[in-house]
Picture: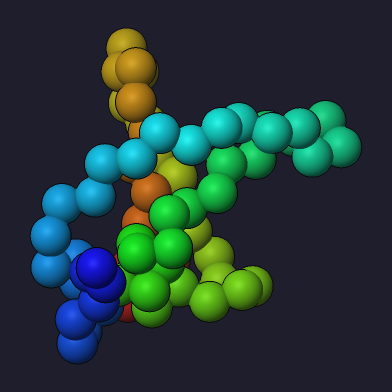
Length: 68
């Protein structure tokens, strides 16, 4: 079921385990398709990755959302 909705927002929760892959020395993960569709992320778009000291998680946000 698609999570897409107008305005680039998730309509439901997304929880998925993805595998980290090697990409010429960098770590690479795939963003689930439902999240890509819902957040209007396209190939070549920037994604902001943040994490706070002491955290054991990262947050992803389309860089276009910074302009909102």
